[in-house]
Amino acid sequence: MFHRVMEWIRTNQGKALLLAAIPVVLVLIDSRTAGSSVTASRTTASHTGHWSPYVVGLGIGILSCLSFVISNRPIGVSTAYAQTSGLMGRVVVGSRIEEMPYYRTVKPEIGWEWMLAVGVLIGGCISAFLSGDFRFETAPPLWVREFGSGVAWRWFGSGIGGFLLGVGSRWAGGCTSGHGISGTLQLVASSWLAVVCFFVGGVATAFMLY
Amino acid sequence: MLATLRSNRRIQLAAGLFIGICFGFLLQRGGVTRYEVVIGQLLLQDFTVLKIMLAAIVTGMIGVHALRSAGYASLSKKSGSVGSTVIGGLIFGVGFGLLGYCPGTMIGAVGQGSLDALFGIAGMLIGTAAYAAVFPALSRSILRVGDFGQITIPELFRADPWPVVAGMSVCIGVILLAVEYAGV
Image (tube, helix red, strand yellow):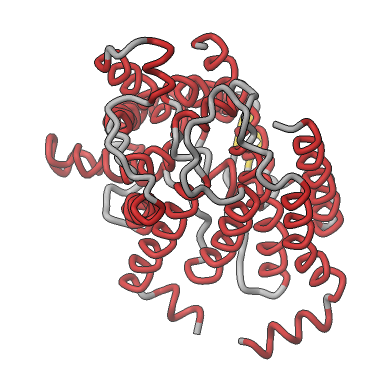
């Protein structure tokens, strides 16, 4: 495999150069403004142990490539919710769930995407503990400052927001990871259109709330 | 070797878990599992989310197209239509603004102790089930409106992918520089 990679680099020097240029450019952009991003913003909470967004983005890009090599699949989280809702539906209505047209396209099973979602939980937890960013919160501090400490409203709003994410992600065929990162990096037309709509809807809603 | 790796179900489930752990780690470490950071982006005050997404897109775009040229990956294209992509995307956007997490980051948010994200997960499971219930009616009607299928931007312009990749990389670089100069 290593030999084939070297062979590819020899025959595609221009592309290899482009590939090598990304980390350099990102580091240059980052070093120019080291520390100045994510400060001085009204909404910025304590950024305990957070890495530069460019380092994180580079990491996610490399991880996407790894996902294609190992599994030949793009990273996408919202399918896991469909698998889970199907599994829960099976508990309620039994095997009839598999006759529903939607669950014929997304099988209710513990699949690759389901394991990915479990991994996200574990990875988020590991990162938060290692950087000292772990803390139990019943509502985000920004929400409490803006709307008071009535936690029940935040929980209700979260449930409604989650419901809309569920409907919208399945309706559009992907979410911020499946369309927003994995689809766009493959230059898929529907993904670029979807991510624009995600942000148009999100920005409009946030401005109405705050 | 890759074919046996990809056809082994157990290895694939383990690979999904491993990639998920790395993904969750990076999302949390980038700060995007925090409600404040996501809302800061949607209020156009803190561009962390955009920076992470664009840096990931440019890296992954060049990497995946290189893998594809070398025969190590095939594209997995999502089909789209105006009725599905635009309407679904806007519904998603409203939920995104209301919840302040997205489907991936809210799982990571639970991992960092943000308990409100649990209600987002519950809501999303119900929303997905509700969509599955109305899917047959939607697929006969609105999802078909303005169908453009599984198409990539290079295919749209009948162009070779590499010039498009190079052009997009330059555009993303310019956007990132502009965001940094604006100091957000």
